[in-house]
Image (cartoon, rainbow, N blue to C red; front, side, top):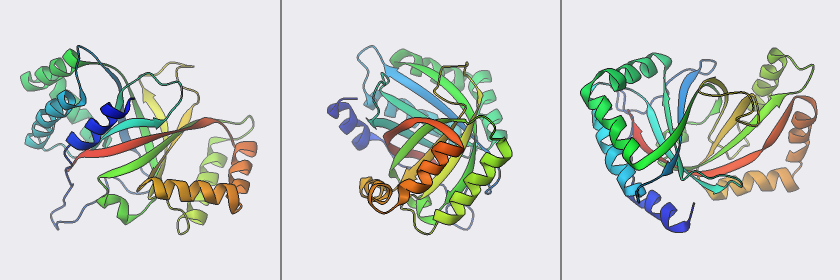
Length: 255
């Protein structure tokens, strides 16, 4: 993505904060439960810009608010992501119940159909859905509107069971929660929209940092403070991973 498009993205999107009845932001699911993630991987067309996407997004957000759809939506732009050809990614996090309600409204209502047509005029997108299990999260993450997201696809090594992998993830989360500069970490498993070989792995790590300083601090810890030992053990003994893509994320709706 060029610098002009990224600048437009970061300056035109509106942020929405999820509020519970007690006026505090809340998590969508408990640790141990899965949240649905819909990812639209999009390329702009017909001379459209991110301003056009923000305009349609505003209509989408009103439609979702009017129908009491709870969830969190992010717009992500690639920062360090070699080999990519898309302009942006839209992440929608919801419970699976809300996912079903939202898509029935999109498919079965006039307004929903109109929104899908509006998007189709300005972009071409591939879409996938996944179950994402939060492993570590900090309350400060609820207040972030801008953040840095890191995505890495992995495949279990031969002889490693899903139970062993899950136990390793939980152990790492427990051991690093107090020291890590990340504010959220989850592991996702595709649930639809994919074919074998389309993505470089069977599951993915999704990590959020509040800013590039926090991301850089984590990389300094890996390079200079022994953090590479835990990472090397994971790559050697548990999973074969394809490398991390770093994206700028902007929260545009939360309810």
